[in-house]
Length: 262
Image (cartoon, rainbow, N blue to C red; front, side, top):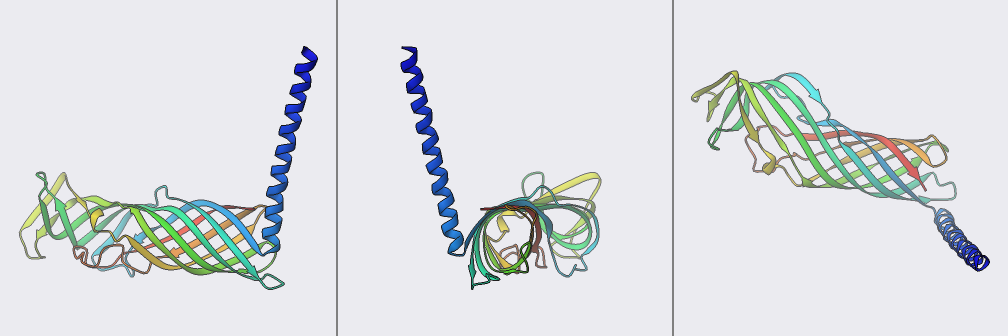
């Protein structure tokens, strides 16, 4: 009986080993076939560092007291198609899930603001004093890029991206200053001695973003690349009818990370 059980066990293990071997062979064959066709697959992960900011810095913002890039992660899968016999040039399309965020503390003067009162009422006007802002937006991003291979280790890319915001947060609070209701000559509401007032412009954020993207990759190992990608949003992060903040703000972020090349 023991010999029969042992025989069955050996047969099962042999069968599993053969199945895994065939699966691995099929996977390797698929990768080789794609490589011969000039196709390359990559999975990337990294951190976004940057900010949502006006350019140039407007007169209303007198001083940036502090800046924290916060934890913003991007995960991407892409496909590159290489052209020509030397395969110097290629085209790439990607899909990326990412967060873009920051926290800032600034000193401002006559800054457009709409604060939320203790009873939930909203008071709009011009703020002079300190303002703390938190931005944390989540996007689905599709870049379309041209890729150039400088040598076996270094290559660069440039193109455009389009993003759809799945979740957005643009909020904060004001303190140590005063609000002129309506306009710079309106009724003065003072916030001092630790008194603060919150604001929230999250519902006024635009769902779409687009702009140029450029990056560089260095092959550290056979299947591992070190990457840097810069995205520069060209449209205002707020909707067109939003007029509380009187200047446009643009998402500008650098993603630094690693990629696994299949």
